[in-house]
Image (cartoon, rainbow, N blue to C red; front, top):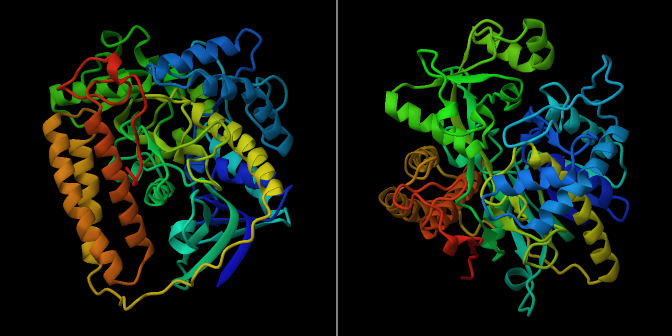
Length: 533
């Protein structure tokens, strides 16, 4: 089936939904999302949104904290824009019905601001420890009540329509929508649009240990790369220091806010160790905390370290962190009485589709927002709770920019051919997908993880070249499935991470190579690549 719309939004997290709500003032919007609409990294976000809302705080302080965390690679103009536009975005959410935690019971009164690693002041707006869930629901309610927006669930994008490939030669490349697979019917539909927005989130599933939900397979980044868009800084994968370590806990994150409220990192014998690595100890930037834990685990041979907040009042813990308290209790851990076993896990990719301050990519009509984009805000390392902030601010600017573009350009939608299988048959060897899926994620963790080396990167480069060849052959020989599409995308993302890491001959922010342990001013620039290079 062919669908036509003014705006096609791929993804249903905070960035995609925020954009859709604002774009719907100008035209029709179609949102495609590969599972239930709420299933996004946003829904699982615990900590909150960083924003200057306390009179004792300042924009200058938040800007400086962000620049320090970014290790010399932040785009200062973007940092200033996001930080200064932040408070207005918070007030928009409140007007939408989001009830953030306040200093008074019942969700009214002065906001209760938290503090997290890398921040010099309390500026984290939160809804206890389920901030993302509360925001996602409010945005979904607004989307579903808007007659200009249609949501298509269980639909996964396959590839973008580039003008040169599907419509004919062009001097300036453009994107006109995407093919998308309906997972229920296994039919590929055509979504034609004047503006296409990639809000597909991150790529944590490229690693075997991640805090991300299963949907985080880097789909938007991979599709944009295949379409020729510029991709930047993929070597900077942030590993969250504290993910619950338990055989039955697949990917449960323990928010940084615990450390903001005084939780201590300890070894098996209860020794605290973070003060030996950074003057801010537990509140050091995430890359430092993650590497410190990784170093201690390699030194001791232990499987995990521990995060202990049991010295705080039990009532406070249950009230401030009800979700974490209940979930840990399900696994037999009472955080009011005992420490939490934790390990680092892949959490947030600071690189992605290179965009400007309005979310515009290097290809006409193609926008990218949220974690899928690389705006220059995060640089070499994201400051805690700046991600939801960036998603809101850039989605707002992107909606304004896209609306202007739509109004001044009345070009007709081109004729796009229907999806053809071209002799492809249904595979009876699904084991090939599961085997390659596991192999990619395992060698990425071992060779391109928290600490890297030239030899490890070379091994990874050889492995991904072979696997990409196998996956592409399988893609063209057999009918597509959602699992195959995600495998194809994580392989592409893995190649991008490896290639970017291999070209950065220094250690900076989230990229640490033992063969180049120091920061080098010659590499104080973005790593940019495209399939046309």
